Length: 112
Length: 117
Image (tube, rainbow over all chains, first blue to last red; front, side, top):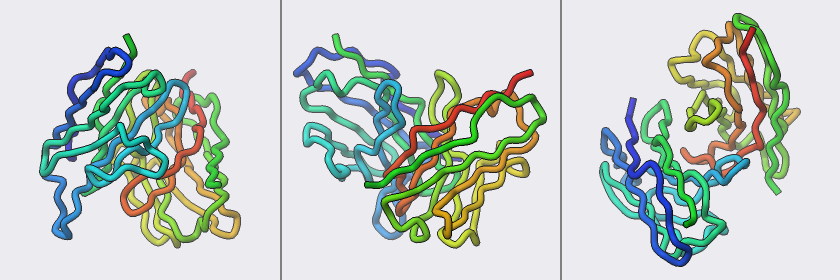
């Protein structure tokens, strides 16, 4: 199985400041079709996860442009340019190049 | 509006069985793969398995193979998860998700399954 490793596991951010989360996969997520099967989800308190970013850097419908994703191969990053109070929750990366789909451990983002 | 509503969770003894349901609306159910994802209390997310549009292909995580079965009824816009030989480690919130081109774009609110004597 592909292991997804996120760092840090927790983050405390002052509103308006940037935040960055790293995700590393144990195998390349680049498919022969040119797509990279790396996704980011946010689980707000008491809610199901919601899709933020698909295929490394594409924001899902309705996701604010302060969220951005980057990376390639096995190393990926989610950045929040200016953290807002509504961004609190647990962020997960996920791979779907291979079954079983696997998630990172999650990064808890809190507001200072 | 896409909606996924899970039901059927509850308390069950170890070794017991439970069937979860997911009612889908707001999209053409029969055109999409569907997945189940679970989350143990205070833990991260674990993909359980998925099923193709016509039910002809199903895949599972190793920890549930032989015990869990995913099925669907496209006429009823419903997804199911039959769970047998339940263990304490199966205790989790189970989410139904729409599986669109390898991503989970919509999730239900989840249903809690507790395996305990």
